[in-house]
Image (cartoon, rainbow, N blue to C red; front, top):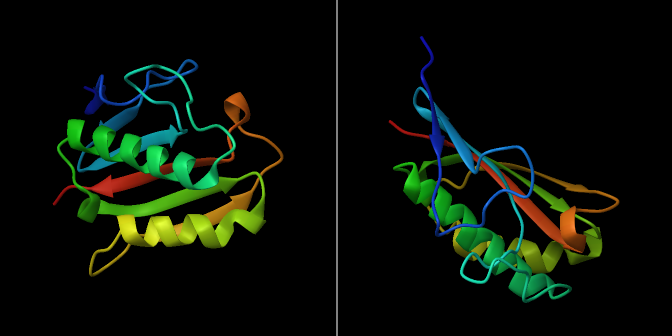
Length: 130
């Protein structure tokens, strides 16, 4: 018997490939990487603007978490993918404001050569529901 549940919301963009927005497995929610697609328009309206992209990515993640019954405080691990680490300080500031909680999640941040649709940032996360 499988204890996996697909998490899907129209308040975050549809996947751009053969994957789900998130999967709930036991007490964990594994959120796929989000990019700066505006779910209302199904397009990227801020391509190339690292600040606006980061804000949209985090809004998308929040909506996926909400659809799974989680909140920002439940996030235990994130991974940030940047096409240029010189954008780290900008992303870090926005990320810090977003995860302004007593115990922010563990995190990795890596530079990658490219991301889907030419975006500058992608973020995924894992949340624990206790």
